[in-house]
Image (tube, rainbow, N blue to C red; front, side):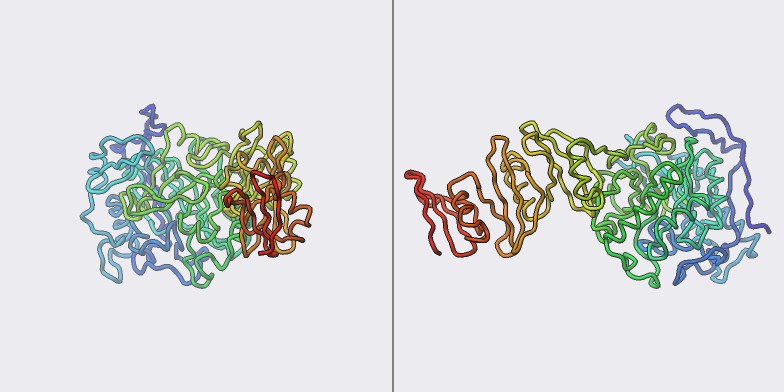
Length: 538
C-alpha cells in the first residue's frame, strides 16, 4: 500500500459572510488524510524516543506540549477520525496490533461522533470571551476553534473535524534540523481542502544548532508563509525539553542564550518570509528559560494552558493570547485550540505581515529624536532591548519610551532642559526614582546610571533646576542627596562620597532640624528656624 491516500470531496463556494471558509458540503464525501509509514509505531507502541528522531525513523517525535501530556493524549484523535484510523490499521496491519487494542488511539469508543458534535454546535459567545461552549459532553472556549496535529495522527477525517467546528490547523512540519514529518504534506493539504486556514510548526531544539539554521530548515521543508489569506504564520514551538539527552528543561541554556536563539530564529524567518513567526510556549517555561523577557511581544502568542476556564498567567509582554491550546484530549484530533479575536483579526493573522498581536505590541515601534540618539549611543537593543511602547508624554513637557531586554524594563526620558537619558527601572536607583513619583519627584535624569568605587549614582533635575543625586551601595541601598539644599551643598563641599561617604539615610526631620547620615560616620544637620548647618561625628 502506498504511504499516502487522499480522498477529496466536492467543495462549495463560501456560504457565510462571517466565516470566510464555510465551504464544506459533508453530504458529498469526506476529505481524509492518511500517512502509513509511521502507523505501526503509533498503534503498537507509541512512545517518544530517547533522542530526537531523524526523517525515516518512523517515530513522529515531539509535539506541541509534549512534556505536559501522556502518549495517550499525544495520539489523540476524534471519534470520526478514529474510525478512519481503524480502517487504515485493518488494511495495513491486518486489523490487529500487538496489544490487541481495537482502538489504536487508546481512547474510548464511547466518544460522540463527529456528526453528533456537529449537530450540537450551539451558539458561540463573543470571540475571546471567557464563556464556554458545551459540545456533546466536552467544552471549548468561545472564539474561533482550531487544532494542531502531527504524525501521531496518521489518519484524520478533515471533513468531520470541520463539521465539529475546527476552522484552522497547525501541522507539525519539522523538528531540529534532522526531522521532517512524514504526515505533513497530507495534513497540510487535507486541512486546506475543507476550508481551514493552516500553517506549519517547528519543534525547536535550541541546543542542536543556532536558530537561523533551524528557521532555514523549517522554511525549506514547508513552514513558509504566503499572503494568500489561508496560510497562518509559521509557528515556533519553544518549550520544555522532552529529551534527556539534550540537557535540562532549558536545554542547558541561560536566559540570554535562549533569547539570542529565539531572536536568531525569528530574524531569519522574517528575512525568508517577510513576517514574524508566531510563538508557542507556556507561561512557566517562558519565565524559567527566557527570564520572562518581553522582547518578543510583537510576535503572535500561542499559549498552552490546560484544565482552566481561561489562562491565569501570560508570558511577560503579552496581556492576552492570540491562540490558546486549551486541551490535549479533545474535542478535536491532536490538541484543541481557539483564536481569541474577531473574524477580521483572524483573517489578518493569515493575510497580513503587519498583523498586530491581540495582547502584545504591533511590530516596529519606532525610536526617534533625542530618545533614539541616547538609545543608540548607549548600546541600542544589545543593551536596552527592544521598544515595548511608543514614545509618550511625560510630566512638565517631557517625553518617555520604554524598552525591555530579558525582562528588564528601561525607560528613556527626554526634557528640553536635560536632554535624553536612560533609566533602569528595576535597579536600586531606578526603583528609588519610581517609588518617589518618577519625574514628578526628582525630575528628569541628566546622565545614565554610573558605577563608582563602592557603589553607583545617577543625577536628576527638575525643570526649575533643582538637582538630586541618588546614590546606591550594597550595604545601605539607595538614598537621595538634595544637592540644591543646605545639607547637599555642605556634603558636596566636603568631597561627597570621597569625604563624608555615601548617604545611609534620606533627609529626615528631628524636631527643628533636618538631618542626614553618611557612611563615613558623619551627620549633617540643618536648623529650619536659624538656617544653621552643623557636621557631627556619629
